[in-house]
Figure 1 (cartoon, rainbow, N blue to C red):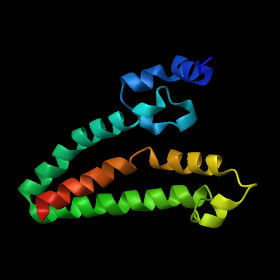
Figure 2 (cartoon, helix red, strand yellow):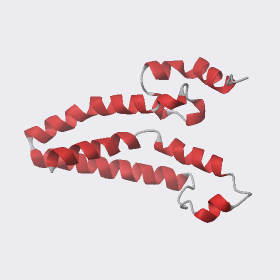
Figure 3 (tube, rainbow, N blue to C red):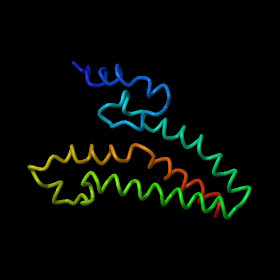
Length: 133
C-alpha cells in the first residue's frame, strides 16, 4: 500500500553513492534515500573547510581571495546550470495560479539544481562571515 518501488530501484543501482557520501552529485530521481542529500553536503563542507581555514590563518589576504574566488566560481557555475536548463524565469503567483502549469515538475527541476554544492558554499559563507567579522 505505501511501498514506493522507485526508491527501491534507485537504491539497487546507486547505493554505493550513499556509502561514499557523494549522492548529492546525481539527479534527485536517481538518488537512493533522497531525504539524506544534506548529509554528503555537510561532510564535504567539513572536508574542504580546513583547507580554506589553513590558508586564511597563514595568509589572510590569500585566504580571503580563495574564499571570494570560491564564491564567484560557484555562483557562475550555478548560473550556467540554471541558464543552460532554461530556469532563468522566476516563479510568480500567476504560475502558481495557472491550472495547466505543472508546478511540481518545475519545483523538482529547481530542487535538482540546488542539491549539489550550493548548500556547501552557503554554509561556508555563513561560517566565514562569522569568523571574519
